[in-house]
Picture 1 (tube, helix red, strand yellow):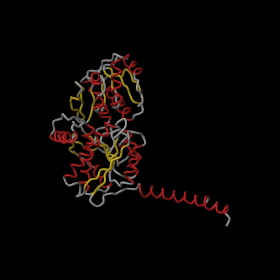
Picture 2: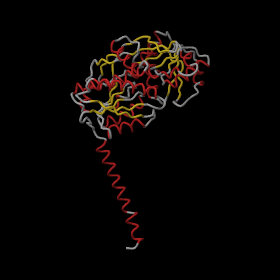
Picture 3: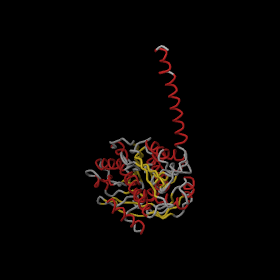
Picture 4: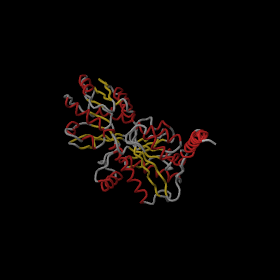
Length: 395
């Protein structure tokens, strides 16, 4: 055979054949690798976690992760679950859209986790929930409050309250404690958390006789909020509700004070991070502001005091709500495995759904028919550069 006659064989059909083999291998990975896992083998049970350990919401992710690790270590030190040690496999989604789904697919397909813990941000939890639901792997979010998270399906759970409750709590606080009759809103239109919480606050405040005098919008990457704040100031509000994450809130409130806006700002659990009060003038600007959250280290229950002491001994700081919720999410999952008598994902899912009166460090909780936690909220005030417990609001 002449050399030119070899080209079709060497560089034609064989390459097409290799592409076919690659396609078949990829399809096999999807079918076999991403199916229900049942990865509890030998002496360990693999549990997945995806968190924002870096990026714009890293303070949330690291705090939640610290609480989760503390719980896993305590569970294992006490003998594990069903005679086996829990192995936590953690993926960093870098606070980026799209990364959570990639992380969860890896946890399910390669690491064979029996359940997934995460995330803090509602948008990223929703993204991951679609994959967990597809492959029937239970997901427990520590602190995503948007109702749409658990609406992704019957394998999705959370240990935090949801925004309809949180929004109502802050609406009642604004009207009752602050005596506000007119409120301005400043909303991150690209964040499901922000849009949802604003909607429920608005509904509750108006239903109680209050008036929303201005409603302005921004997006995640905005740095200059003075145009929106100027419009809100002109409407003469008694308070301004900003349901956003801590990094944005600090900039917003500092710019508001520069414009001569003196009324209190109020918000939700997205405020709670030490970074909220960092930077020149941040503490002074946020003095007298308030936000709702899930936990305060100043709560005087035996369980919370024990958790605060253990967390402080390990991390040298008081835990915040994200740490406490991360801890509770891991403890609830372990409790469900014990009640199920199995680490099989289907049985764990059923046990999670049957959770009633679970005693967590963030309070007693019951998971309702929609797999959301019914529990109390707390309101914190910002005073002298500290988060100070103000009051507890029951459901």
